[in-house]
Length: 217
Image (cartoon, rainbow, N blue to C red):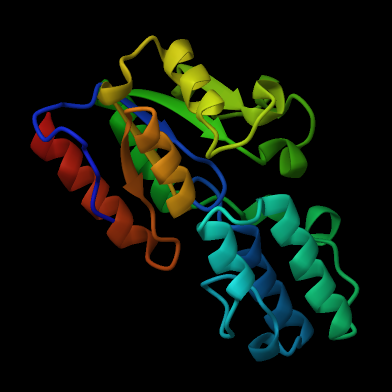
């Protein structure tokens, strides 16, 4: 949860948030809750770092070796091998998927005058086409970049550069927040600062983020 500021004297002017896992609970977190309700053998299912069992595929995604859509397929296949027919895209209830502690920080930073943007890889898969047009939180962000429209996924440089251009901010002045180490490294590769968000301990991540921002401003 330690920010990589690249240049210690550089004060960020804009905060760029990833979406899944940070603003919203990661889908595997919700699947753990669903599995408890349904009596799934959770210890034998790969459901991310918040699940009770090991998940080497999540670790591969964190390293950037597979994409989230590929990871979803592997999770679905693992459930099928356990005799469970379940699609994360269609069978999950996302009505309680918000991470309220993160939204409290986003609101706090918005009121304090921080510039904020959003850069997401997979929101379209979960929220539908052009979700940002009716998204109730749109007013909190100067720019929303969905890689569905950027044409290439993080950690490739193009999505970060598109966000930098949309925010009209120098890359070293942008602090990018993501729950995937590979995506944080992608941000650093284009000159942005990065902050890794630990979904197993979101409150500690948020406390560290707020403390850092209060220190540098």
